[in-house]
Length: 181
Image: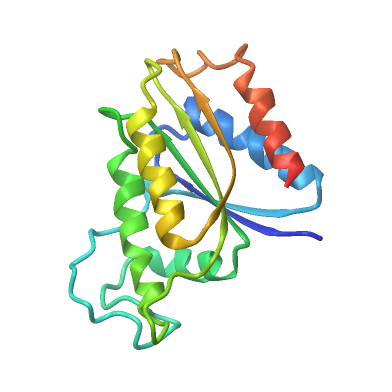
């Protein structure tokens, strides 16, 4: 059955190593008949969560803030799979991804019990080094809290400059993960 997949790409580089991984994943997923929508968060106007608990009153505009999250909310709501993609910055995901993800709480506020929609998920990361432990710890606990199911992780270390990833096996791993969904 064809699925709707949303990629939240928190990399500032549209042609960087994280983007190469998401492109491979997307190619595999589309080859299997899935629909993939990718958001390059760095180029979007997304402000931080205000922690106001005032969202959820209007499902079409779930947050009190009006910014580019209004483009993401409908795709996220309809998605079967959410891909969190980021370079590793100081042992964690990028600020761009964290900011956008925090704002998804407005969708949970649309539920009378403040429940997040249940999704399958994927973590894709690229890094100069290979210390993914903190991000994986966060991701695993996020899934547990949200009630999500991980379909896999692609973690590619030792890539710094755009193109460093070109000969890495993680590109094929990302393609195969996308195709396997």
